[in-house]
Structure formats: structure tokens, C-alpha cells
Image (cartoon, rainbow, N blue to C red):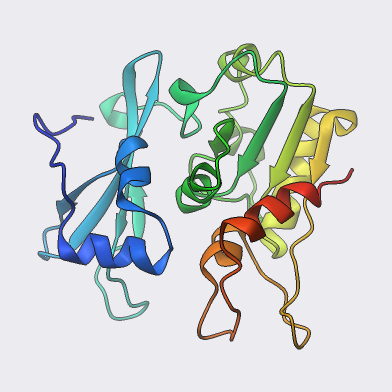
Length: 231
């Protein structure tokens, strides 16, 4: 994987607009190392570089504009392992190994959400949640290796903040088993102020969802999510 020789200080209008929809300030994305490129179809692609010990281990790409069944190719992808990449969590080089709490989220946007809310001890899963139908779970969880456990050895608590859906709940259960249930805590996603619709993930709490009629709860909502933790 290769980073661009010069990373632009300002994102394109398309990427800036995409970040605005997520309520993620461009500076937060930039400080997280996010850069952009264009795909073969000319559409803008957000790029998340995965570093560990100052070495680039992988890059995840995500199309800014994607319409299922219409757009060609996947919405998101990583560099193939044939090129020597590794599976590591996003944010390991920014993580303080002396911290006593480790927040684990399902995706990059969720990690940026927590960082925007003032939390620094946040790691994102490499490639989203674990499907309950996954046959080779060990391979999908190879990021839970000696480097990860060495990095988080001071953590007395893992706060698992995966999505509030089938995949996210299953992922949370599997992570709890691997990390030790006695050290794992979960968060409770709030419901819409009026009605029974529940928020699905951290960024939805921050930015809301117009289609679901879920209002943005902002940074205050993310901090409330943190305070909702329980075993």
C-alpha cells in the first residue's frame, strides 16, 4: 500500500459534503489520516490508512457516492493480501497504551464520531462486523493478536460499541468471548424522542438519519452513549 506523496490539506467539495452528512469535521478526518482519491469511474473515494508502529499495513477505500445495484464494484474494499498487507485495527498508532479503557467500534466513521466527541482511546474493526454465517471466524478475527493485546494490556475495560443490528450484536458477543466477558461492557443505543425507532450506531446518534426520522443528538448524544455502558 502506498500513501500519496503529498496529502492535500483540503478535501474536495464531494468529500467535504459527505463528511458534513456524517457531522464529522474535516479536521477530525484529516487528523485521523484520511485522504481521498478517485476510482476508475471518476467518482471520489475516501481512503483510510491503517498504520501500526509507523508502518502502513493496509488501506481501506470507500466510495462517497454508491447506489446498490447501480454502481459498479463494491462500496468498500481493502488492498489484497497478495500485496503484503496485514489485518489490523484502525487507530492503533494513535492509541495510548497506558489508557485503562478501550472503545471498540465497528467502522471508521464511528471511530471518527467518538474522536469528535473527545475520546481518543478508540479502535475500529478492520472490515466491519462479523456475519453470523461466517464459516472461518478465526481468520476474520486475526487482528486480535499479540500486538493488539500488548497495545491494550493496561485496559481494565473494553467498551464494545458495535452496531445495533444482527451483525453488530453477534460481533459484540464474539468479541466479548475473545476478550473476556468480565472485561467487556456494552452501550445502549437511545430511541427516537417520539416513537419506537432505535438508533443503530454511533454516527447515527451524532448525525441522525433523515430517512428514519431520527434527529441528530450531537456530541452530547455520543457522551450519553458512553455513560450508558453496562456489562
